[in-house]
Amino acid sequence: MYRTHNCGELSQKDIGKEVILSGWIKRIRNFGSLFFIDIRDYFGITQLIIYKKSVKKNLLLSKESIIRVKGKVVERLSKNYNLPTGEIEIYVSHIDLLNSSLSPPFTIEDKTDGNEEIRMIYRYLDIRRDPIKNNLIIRHNLTLETRNFLSKNKFLEIETPLLINYTPEGARSFVVPSRIYTNKFYALAQSPQLFKQLLMIGGIDRYFQIVKCFRDEDSRSDRQIEFTQIDCEMSFVEVHDILTFFENFIKHIFKKIKNIQLDSFPCISYYDAIKMYGTDSPDIRFGMSFVELNDLTKKENINFLKNQELVIGIKIRKCIYEKIDCFLKKIENKNFFWIKYLYDQTFLFSNQNFLNEEVIKIFIKYFKAVPGDFLFFSYGKKIKTREELGKIRLRIAEFLNLKNPKIFKPLWITDLPLLEWDEESKKYKSVHHPFTSPKEEDIYLLKKDPKNIRSKSYDLIINGIEIGSGSIRIHNKNIQNIIFKYLGLSKKEIESRFGFFIKAFEYGVPPHGGIAFGLDRLVNLLEGNKNIKNFIAFPKNNYGKDLMINAPSFLEKEKLKELHFR
Ligand code: ASP
Image (cartoon, rainbow, N blue to C red):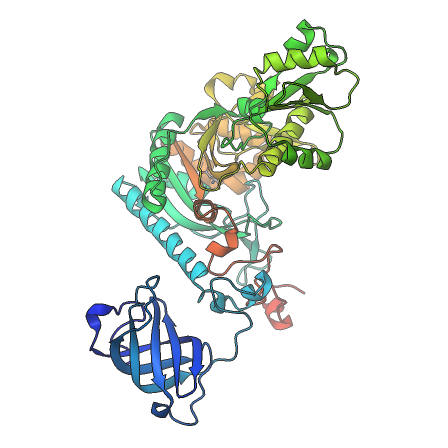
C-alpha cells in the first residue's frame, strides 16, 4: 500500500492514528540525531519527524526524491496555522525510498529562481510548484463551469474535425501532408467555424466546444500558435440575443470563479470606440475618453489648431505631477501639447507658440478642469491622431497605476466593418471572417462602397483585451457568394474550397450566429493578466517552440519520402 492518506488531509482529529504517506521530499532540516522532512503531493504538505536510528544507513534522502513513510500522527509543538496540516506531524517509524531524484535545476517553491526557459524545458517540475498547479486547477474549474452553464442552457458539446482543408480565415493555417494521397494536404483547423455552422444547418439548435485551434502566426506573449477556444453557435438569434446570453455567461463565470458581480456591459459601436478611445479594444477602467475640440478651436478662432483635421484631448483627474513629469520626459514631442492646472491655480503648459494664457483658459473652462487636473491633447490627421492619443492614454494610465488588475470592466464592441482593403494583396479582406453577415441597412453599399459596410459582428473586450469575438452569419446563398467575390475568390475557387458549404445553403439554413472566447486569455485575465503560459500545462515559447520536447524538429529522409517530399 502506498498511502492511507494524502499529504494534505491529516489534522488534530487524526492524532494517534498509524498512517502511511507517499510523496516528494520538499525540504529536509537536519538536527543531528533527528531531522524534519516536508513531504509533498498534489494535495498538500505534511511535516515528518524522523530519528536517525530509524533510517537505514545507506538510505540517501534528497530533495524531490519520492518516499513512503509509515508513522503515527502526533501533535506539533510549534504549530503552523497557515498550513491545513500545520498542527500535526508524523512520527516516522519506517521509511522507504520509492524513487530518487537528481537535484532539480531550479527551486521548486512558490518563488522560484528558475527563468522561463528552464521552467519550460522541465515543465513537469514547474507543475509541481503551487502557482502553476493552482492555475491548472483554476482552468479546470473554469472549463467545468462553462460546460455546466452551457449544458444547462441546452447547448450540446460536439467535437468537430481538426484535420480539414485550407480555408482563408484571416490567419495562416498549419498544413499536414497526406501520406496516402500524393501532393495532398490537410490543414489544422483555425477554428470550427464552418462545422459549427453546418451543425446549425443540421438542426442542432445550440452547440459549444472547448476546442484546440491552430494558427500559424508569429507568437506573442499573449498568443500561442495552438490555443483553446470556448466556441459557441446558436440558431434563430440576432445580435441582441447573443450579447444578452453571453453577457450572462461571463457574469456567471466571474461570480463562480472570482466571486465578482460584474455590472452590465456597455455596448458601443466600433466607430464610436475609435472616436472615443482611438482603438477597437478600449480599456475603460479609467475613463479618459477623447473630447473632440474642432468646433471649439474654430469658434474661439485659435490659430493653427483651428486648421487641423482633428484636435482631441483627454482630462486626467487629480494627477500626481511627479509621475506625469516622468511620463512627459519619455514622450517625443510629436503633435501633442499639454496643460497642468496646478493646485495654486496657476498653469504650466507645453512650449508651443499657439499656446498662451488666453487659449489655456478656454480649454480649462471647456474641460471643466479643477486645480490638480492635467489635460493632454493631440492634433493632426484623423486616424493617426486618434491612434497616437489612444496609445498615450494607455501609457498615462500605466504611469499613474490606473490599471487595477482587481477591477474588471467588460464591454461589447459592435458593428465592426465587414471588409478592409489590403494594400499588399490589393484585395478586400474580411475583418472578422467571410461568413459574417453585413447589416441589412448597409447591403446597398456592397457595390459602391464596400469598406463602409458595417457587419453584424461583436467583440467582448475586458480591460483592453479581446476575450471573445463572433457574428451573426450569412444565411443567404447569394450574399455569401457576393462576399466571396469581394474577397477575390473566383467561381472555381469558391466551388473547390467552399462547394460543400454553398451546397448546404440549398437545404434550408436557419438564421444563426455565434461567438468564441479565448480560454487561455480569459483564465489569465481572471488571475491578474500576468502570463498566458502560466495557465497552459505545456505551452510553447514566444517563438512557437516547445522547449521540452524540442518541437518543431527535422524529419528523417525516409519519413519525408513517405510523405512524397524529395
Ligand atoms: N470562428 C471565430 C473565431 O475563431 C469566432 C466566431 O465567429 O464564432 O474568431
